Length: 112
Length: 114
Image 1: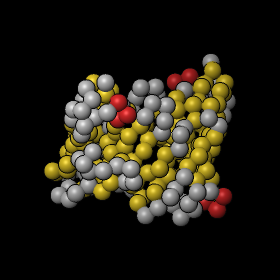
Image 2: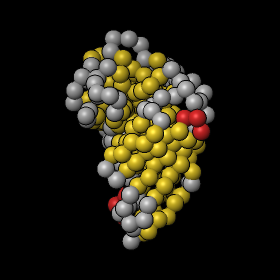
Image 3: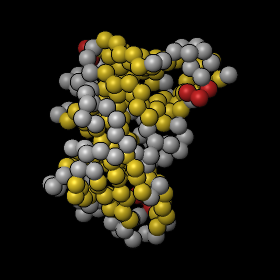
Image 4: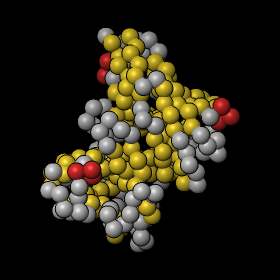
């Protein structure tokens, strides 16, 4: 059973500084990793998906995947206060690429 | 991309009643997924629904409690039977476009059971 843990639980970063979020997973056979964010009271916004080891950039969002280390990270370049939200890491359930297990999220606060 | 519309956005019901949540996609999609999110918690996959077949439920979720219909390639309904206060949460539908694998989510339906 895939287990997903995110760290830190909460992160405060100054506007313009790089924000880095971490996610570890238990099953290294997964090939499907996604980052979403959720503003308070809103739905999920797709940020970046990555399917192989290495780096994937989507605008200001970059995901790094290292399956050997069971680790995927998200880096946000030049964050703005509007980027303040809960960031969720999602990993495919073993045997089901579109069926996701989510972490509990990182609350990101961008201070002006 | 796929846009998913959920109805209702929020609802309040009494214990013991049943509630239906609809999910409509703006294009045909193969699979639809339903997730449950308790306040301040992460999302939990409930079931997968494909057209013309019975939904497949994850551990902890049953079709008696959460029957799901998928009558066509753009529509799905989740029903919460015999609702209890412990069912109060936000329910999301999700699906993927036909591309390389972007998974999209609806805006969510917040259910409060009194």
